[in-house]
Length: 266
Image (cartoon, rainbow, N blue to C red; front, side, top):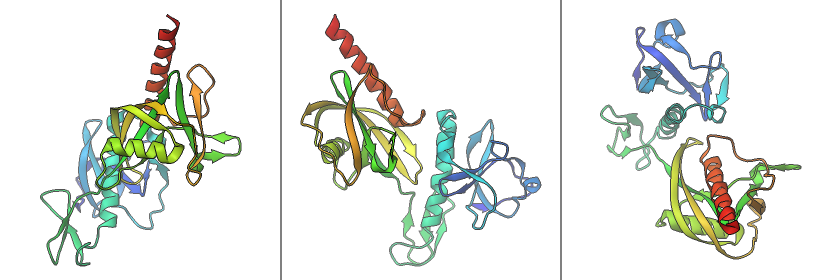
């Protein structure tokens, strides 16, 4: 990042953790001087409506109003991902101010997005945590779980299973392990579906579809409140928001359930 000049202009992204500042439900837009951003540190991270999108270094003690990034899932993917990029960059800069090798001060490099130690020269790059997320189908049914963090007395959200990839583990191994650990179910026919950057705070969600192989549901009670098989034609519980890869996985699996049902009838 560099000092913002008075004639710098475009759209402006201010963040606080996984939240961002909006004015009249939009990003601030205009010249830095008129918006009071002159002298702050910032960098251009992309284009927003054909103008530069400036990321401003996270400000402590900022009294502006901020909204959760999740509330912007209605945006086109490229815009949501650009906001996610800004939030992840600020998280990286804020959490890597000191060298993890020798403890001395880091400074941002000019040739690439990295932090470099002023003492030993060690470079650190944005940390991205790979996570798997999987929808499991059994014939015309989908496996959905109510995680403890989503539990509410009258139900709460049901979603697909997910978890972080462990060291020395393939994505497919992580998929099998997470499903087994959380529900006691064995799966097969694992195939890649898609991915989604998830800036809460710095994950990359890698999505998969899978088929049931064997087992009965046995909950990992420390994490899962409930898990059930739901038929595609029955009323479904509360689902993840539109725009999440979890919702896309569920829709894709329900379409497979419907196709399997039609094939059985024909």
